[in-house]
Image: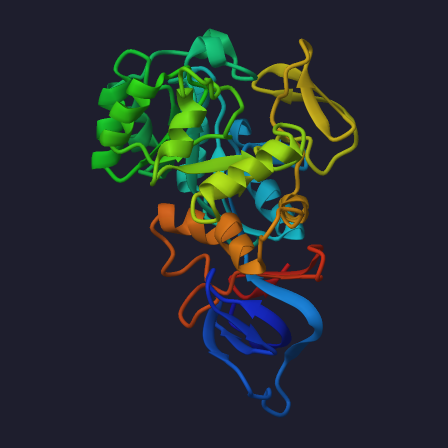
Length: 383
């Protein structure tokens, strides 16, 4: 992190609004020191010179990922978290939230304690934890192990937050379950993002939750009450909201390309967040893997339980970007928002992540014009 170098050329998309042709970006001590135009690198400097058709973006932030390359958050080890962190830059991800799955209190406590104490030394930066389950609706369990699902429990959450060293940043929960609204109020009051997911909430419940501070929806469409013409459900409520941001697994498997495009048209680039929801089999050969003690078979880019249910994904974020580029009227500035800036804003870290700006972390991904990763820098270190 101590070296000084320059990125020169290409086209940089700064923050979802501004862009620069052939910028000169100075990186020093893991930070972006300056961003200039119409400047040349100094003589003798270390320079990464780019082609004119290469694209420079803030590094992607994956706020919902369980695992990759054989490792899972629920392994509860530093080695597992390090494996995930080292793998992600290859797909342009420079920071992430380690995501849990509904498990026993003991297993969840271990995973939270480990993630809370983990220090990111190289690779993608661990920003905290996304607690997915166990406070969800059993009828919308999906790949969440039903045996460990419990109603929202404020005291248990407080205990887990303490164990994690206050590193839980997002909680996926079902607001219609007993004490769901009480949990939402506490999350909002303590600066934790409440995210509706694995939920059968009706419109009136969603309205109450939004009044109590609900601001996110977990993997839109997947395991939530769908849009119906006489009951908006969770999906319709998200569409009608003006503040709820929605995760989307853009693998064209979890949600069809057409409905993904529709969601982009409705929500716009300010309220969509691309995620992977990836499991430990991402990056490995097709075959059988474990997810929360359940057998998952990966075949033809799909991860499924024995009953055929989808069980997370093996999606790479740059593949999601290439799928997003098919949307009508989408720009690279929109891509910045849905891959990094929106997440950074929600996590209240957009002063250092999600932008290519002076003083921000040098988290940068360089892509080909059609969305393939060419180089990734995590806090100024090429990965």
